[in-house]
Length: 561
Image 1 (cartoon, rainbow, N blue to C red):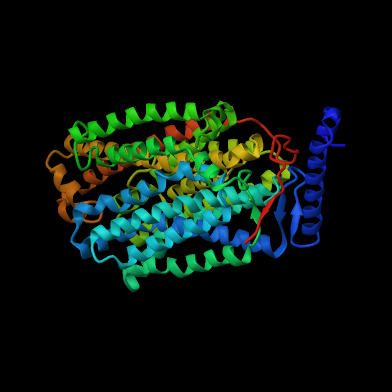
Image 2: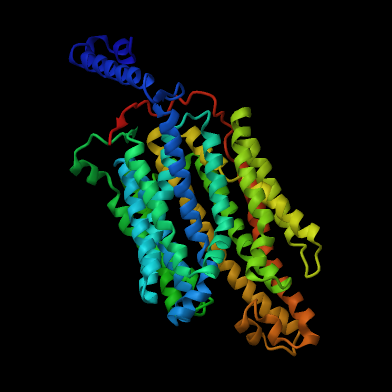
């Protein structure tokens, strides 16, 4: 007997018939799929693909994750040759800023859209935008077209990133989900680590345009696999609403305030201290507008209630709040390390661009391997918190050891320190995403996952801006203090690669020491963030991924082609 039957016997008749009809339809679907290519998750009564369809789905999602990681990490290696070809050195900062704007600004609204519209169609549409951006980037005749292409790349990547996490969460049972998320995290780590090496090798043998062209056929293949090879995906709870009702569910007020707020804030961080002084009126105006829009955004999200793209009530969950903080700190520290450790190898150790990439492999490999290992361990023990606490602790130890690097550190030290840090960040990569899925009901999971993805990107943008200003200021101060005979502007203008050629021989060791101290100061920022991540990890609830989640959605509807 259903709950409705027992609690309201007088309400039988049309209501009872409707409940029975719904139960019968659900059983019918379940029976059909159990004989085919689907399986029912006993934890949440959702229908999940299995067998070859699940394999195709996961392969396409992981491949999409790798493409986004590669696209976001390859640009640093290519910017020197691109600016040289376009004669647009002044646009250098825009090549990455445009991508970050496209990636970060629409990310929150994607969470709302994935809870309303077809997951499959949204994911394919995101791939289409990503492909168009890649083609425009590769074929761009001028710098302006390249910047536009990078912006479209970011918009498409935001939808792909959101789709990967959301589709995995709705297509796999909770008890095995840590393994799938671990593979996803390992793939992303590998892409972020090996992207510069792949792009550098391609650009050296052909042209930088090929680095973006090769993305297109792979992305088209991936999109076709999802389109034709995976005909069924779980339907959102609001999928049966009329089109006008779906449009009304979109948080338009939140979107109108969040987009310009994010754009203004990113521009202020990117321009402040580099293109303009922090006290320049342009930067000040951007920060003021950001603050006003932030207040407006919080107000409209409060008024929107459960229809908001970031329901504020969801943040009352300590797991969601602390998972967001852990994710923010982890990725902010990772971006600082991944940008300034290669700089240490190039400027202080004298390595080439390719050589610094090879010297960074200990982080890349250990991070990818332990991101993969963490998932099966979580599935085995049933809890994500132990892996998260161990991972964040190792990350803090690793960043602490990185602050001890000096110009003559032995290979054993800079390799070992990287391995410890990579192990930690790899293990703590996915547990926050598992945590929010364990404690939230199905309707809020997409928005929570996208919120964590947003904090990842936002943390990276924020720390890079802060780190750049700390590095430049500390380097100038160190040079003035220890090597007054050398003009700091000469060192800064020639960058890391040409540093040795412009400094007199008798002052080179002192300049390298000044460079090293400035980089170590950035590592102290990463250390503080890593330690904060450990503290925040204790705030996440201990929940088992093996226990049934009674609050999760019990909808078993599926989506056809």
